Length: 112
Length: 114
Image (cartoon, rainbow over all chains, first blue to last red):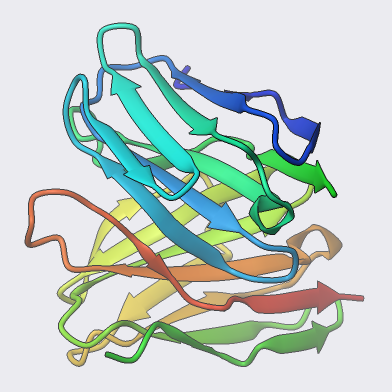
């Protein structure tokens, strides 16, 4: 069965700290997306990763993709309160049925 | 460029009724996907339409159906509503011309079934 697993599912951290969210998936794919969702809002596209070794950075967030390990990471540097949100990874099943499969999401709460 | 729009934003229905949700994609996008989001199951894929044809389908019962019009606008219909259909229904559009499927989401329709 195809699985996209994020961990942790919930993370409470202090401002100024660094942390990493992990996204593991169980099938071959070279494409992975990260999204952010604020409470009561829709999803906003953050990063598009399209090959092994891809790394994208925007502000305090950096995403990477290791297709051999079937692992993507979203690293948060010196967290600030505004980054509090739920973060989803989504795997593109390009070699199977071309669907997008989302992880359960990581709810990030940054304490001021 | 205007974003993805969904109407209505909120709906309250009773069991057994049917409902139709509408989605207008970003101009030029020919792919529209629908997702159901619930606290327990997360984001689950319903179906994708591309150029008026259903391109993909998730594991939902036949009560969930959709269609796409020639202007790429899409509708989703749920018949014989059940309590468990209460959810946020999200529509996402994609151009699918760049070789990958980055999706842009609408604000969602919050459906409550009583």
